[in-house]
Length: 171
Image (tube, rainbow, N blue to C red; front, side, top):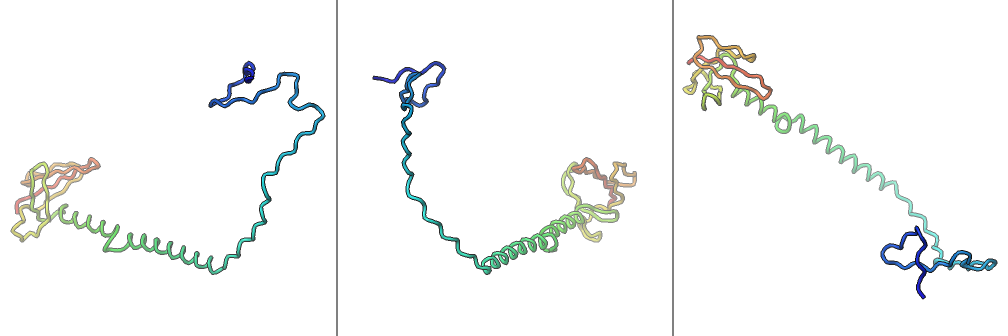
């Protein structure tokens, strides 16, 4: 005999599992008055656990010393990176200043100009050097024009949109 069809509005068992046959209404599964069967035990009780061994205070001290040394080393590295003149931020700043001194002429500096007119490279040189071509007369950051006494004008625009104009005379 097969299982009776499911009642209305009851979902089917998923994944093809068969339902347990159900007793029709009015017939209890166990007759009244009969005691239920006791459940089986699930296994032997666990033996009591041993207490964990005490940690020695020396182990905690060693851990603290290692952590302190680690944080101290990282702190020293960060400090050294930011203050050492031979490396890190200070070196980058010194390199940038040296580049500016060499390629950003001030009034009175002699320069050698290379490259096309729209992308000129100015290099500061000694005024008594054979490389000296021009002498810086004026610099303008606000876009003012150079006077008629200057023979060469170079205008460079920065990333921020501001431009600098250098006015030069022949050496």
